Length: 309
Length: 308
Image (tube, rainbow over all chains, first blue to last red; front, side, top):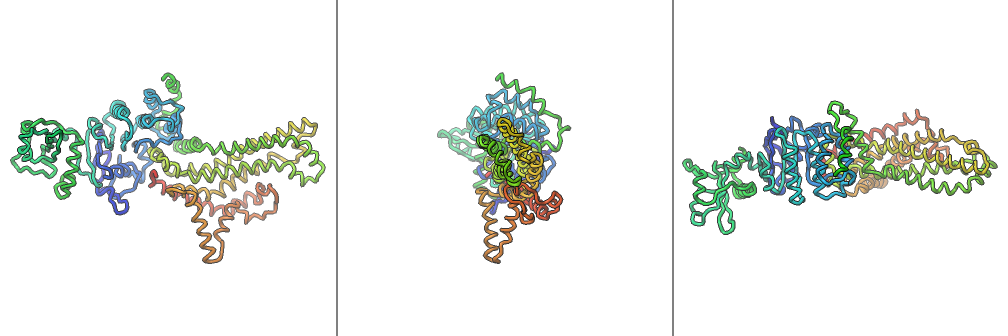
């Protein structure tokens, strides 16, 4: 079942196009990472999905128009947009009471049991909690809501590594159940790489890259090339090359997409690349850098084809 | 950690089945929320009442002498001597809650954007309509009723205290000697509060709530300067001051239409229109229309607003 479907989604702030024709489709049960540089349109895209901003083009979330049906939609969707948006004056017990009061799908027992694992006291006010504890509280509230779509916009920004790890662990272990859908944006790409089922790169208001994690793992190979074989490796037309500790690290796309044309009979495979040096699956961050630098240098036709896929 | 388990049994209250989830619950909880956030709603009038009671208790020292003096003067003048303090009490609390209402409205949809919590409120299934109406309900209904309850409670305390003092000094009970009825005064107060402070002033609250939804900063200036500017432009361009009169008419509680025959403090409370006259007053209904317009606009504006 499709949870989010967007076609030609546009949003302009004055002369800048925050969203410049976004097409995307997210199915039920996926955990999708939306990754992009600052100002790429991530937050605008999520705001449109959550009914926080108006837009042009077609957008359906769980079959509803988010802009005109936000309050209805919020029965099935919950989100953490940014850290520390809980009102500072509210007491933990009041937050629980209030959400239980207004949300038909909130299970207070569940929230209490999440909170019991933390050191958060019921009579504390949010302003007395540390940033990490506020994130824990917000997550406890959100995870106790039986929602179909959870949207997280930089949910762990500014938290230390222990809280960040805990955050994604509880999300996966206590919340995600394959019938729920999660969309997450973050700058800490490495930390969510193992969490995701799909990844999308967004740049200048467009989705420039999109694939599932299985596809990602089978398709992209990074090779730390032996110094004497660098020329041979370069001949195979890598997507991207970067130096690391005095050696060249080349990133290859086995499917030969993204505008890299190796000719009809030159099909790469892993063995061929392993012969050139140390081959392994790249990190999402490396692929992101590769894709983004290709976007920069190659604004032309090839990438538009890639984006359309 | 053990303390947490204590909280578990009450949790069954919160986890009700969606089927029994009534449409009024978001409204109820939104209003409760306002009390949590804006404790000045009840603290300010309670503080004013306590302050008054404190002063009143000191003044009780002179009460027996006052009552003896009152017995000697004309009944019409007794009011000035003793009932005076009851009116003063009502005025003090009313003025306090009116100021609270103005500041509350100016901050109503501004505070949530300033502290970014609007992103949390909007993540819950509460519509902009419910949010705006719950915020407008505070100055229009809740504050007048609260003012009424606190004032009447204060009156009763004052009445009992002076009764005790008078009995102690061998005089008759205060109701007889003071020639006034707490009950009638309470009804008048309720009518005044709901009619003037609630319904008649509603467009003022609506305007302030609209500005609080719209302004990025300096909501107070945005709420006042444009009105001032309209008045000045009108004065300069046409040498008239209709707009200023309109504002004055609104703030004075529609006094222009009321033949203000009563003088003194009770003029404030004394309704010189009957309920029927008040309800067919066109000023009331244009006020309602304006309030509806302002609140509808506030709703639209809040829909597209995010943190500032």
